[in-house]
Amino acid sequence: MFANPLVVSVTTPGGAPLAGIPVSFVSQGSAVVVTGSNPAISDANGLASTTVTAGSSGAATTVVASTSNSSVSFNLSVTSFTADYTSAFDLLVLQAVTGISNLRMILAIDDPATTPALTQYGTFFTSILNPGPSLFFTSAYDDLPNYDPSIVTNQSGILTKFYFGAGVLNGTAVFQGYAVYVDGGGQLQVLVTNPAYETF
Image 1 (cartoon, rainbow, N blue to C red):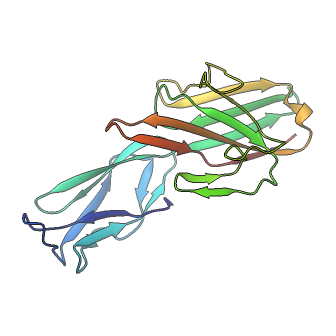
Image 2: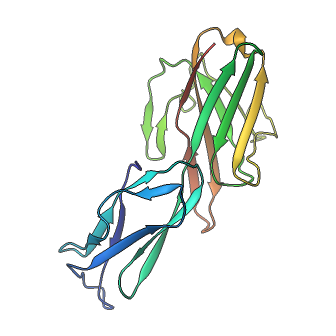
């Protein structure tokens, strides 16, 4: 479930709140499922809200909230991040599904005992904000260490990286992906994936 509900304000043309107005929320893709009240009824302050949960596919999607004579859209991005190690080939596969094409990313690995850092952008499970001794990261940002121009999502918004020889990690590690980008509305956004744990 997303951390914050989707909230709309129902008002008169003059801006006065309208109570008791039904607001329908419709997801325009399978990446997000509306799980809260639907329709939601605006309260005394004219606010109507519902909750949404990530569906089965990681992608960008739109949820439309509408009354009988107006509508507003929420653009949401659902991500999934996995780490899979195959000992027979000593191969680690990291995959980020973001729904955002040509997105430059940061891939980080750290000790799973790292204390999570809660931020307005999401929870960081690696120490990348306050680097610890076990942190290692590589990225498609050429102004950061360990530059790798291939850490960019494809046209479908998916990044897949193969790392041979990962068995030298010898233990359990936590992986996470990050990105900073400007959205279609010109707003700066920070993407923080879920953590992925793997044992070597």
